[in-house]
Amino acid sequence: MRLAIEEAKLALKADEVPIGAIIVSGGCIVGRGHNLVETLVDVTAHAEIQAITAASSTIGGKYLNDCTLYVTVEPCPMCAGALAWSQIGRIVYGASDAKRGFSTIAGNMLHPKTVVTSGVLREECERLMTDFFAKLR
Image 1 (cartoon, rainbow, N blue to C red):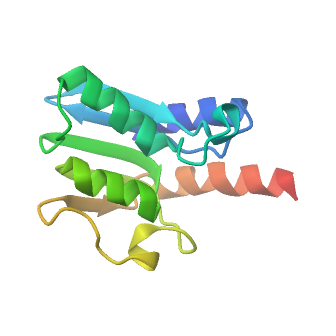
Image 2: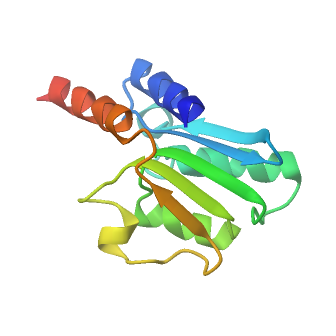
């Protein structure tokens, strides 16, 4: 999760919403990403999507069932859908998202075998988000 937080800080430096993601398989990082929505002018350029694309390229396949995603904020429904299609084995996230998180909006739309762990380094992940949005107001 610490590496996902570092990715989120890269997003913050680029004036992006500070969300970062890392995908690990067999103890090795196979994908990483941070929000690039503003940079790419693309509403789908979320951290998780960037990490999924990188991981699929690295492992040479679209299924990530032996992988774990570490992400600083609970995935939105769009990202959760992509994670479901990838059949990711595990998702670990820091901060919950009561407004846009998949568990609030869409229930459990993940692959049935996906294991979810929440609240890892929650306070640090929340602080990145609250500090970012406080500066906008």
